[in-house]
Amino acid sequence: MSAGDERGRDQAERAGALDDAFFDLAHVHDTAGIAARAASLFGAGYGGRPGVLHVTAVDGNTGRTLRIDEHTPKCLADTFALNLVRVRAEAIVITGKLLRDEPGLSYAPGAPGAPCPALATFRQQLGHTAPPWLVIMTRGADLPLDHPVFHDGHTRPLVYGPEEGVAPLRTQTAAEVVGAAHDGGLPQLIETLRARGAHTVSFEAGPSTTRHLYDAESPRVDELLLSTYRGAPLAESQLAGAAPSPPAGFTDAGVGTVVHAVSGPWHFAWFKRGRSGLG
Image 1: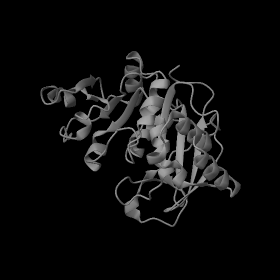
Image 2: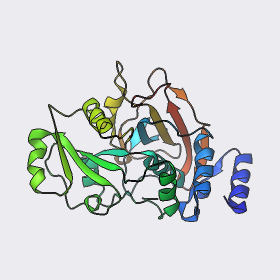
Image 3: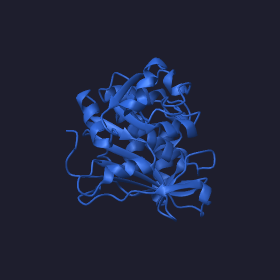
């Protein structure tokens, strides 16, 4: 981390919050800079063990998930948090709906912000030499197979869903297609990925999908990384479903960092439970 980085972080910390500009990936050129920002956002103990990770951004005024589009409040620290989870993941789980809603979605290091080659190096230092699987949950209909994620080389696309729905896609895409028995729910998907050696799985899907990670009797999530927008009230069109609550047994492992962005203040928290579901 440069002397300028240290001065900027120290000044912001003395003021009780961090400046969002500190997390601009356009100015991060080495893995030391990645590690310093990770510690600033989530504490020195962030990361380490494998497990099921959920990263999401919510509205602090309503407790609802932010709808991700051009109208979403912007925050460089939130982009950094998303990339910090992605570099840990051996598999990233999304839905076909996400591809339809975000035609420009990219998993290039730094996206949706500036390119950041240091993130790729950081991932290699974590022991990940192959791109992550990008698991696209779908029932087979209207999957945009021309979406860039199928062709850009940043991930290994894997289409997953009920066998009867995804079977026709095998002749339509070069991506791997995995048909599941019954509805191909999250427990079955997690077991399928574990059998492939994916011990760290990140969920970026929307609330209607990820709420099943929090089933009261048997929660599947091991870590929740929560970016909370605390600015001005948002319009209904900027909000999605209800945000998750950490299950019983979760602890706040982070430092409760506040970041001041142009869009307003944001709060970052890292919750984890005592043992890993994939370990």
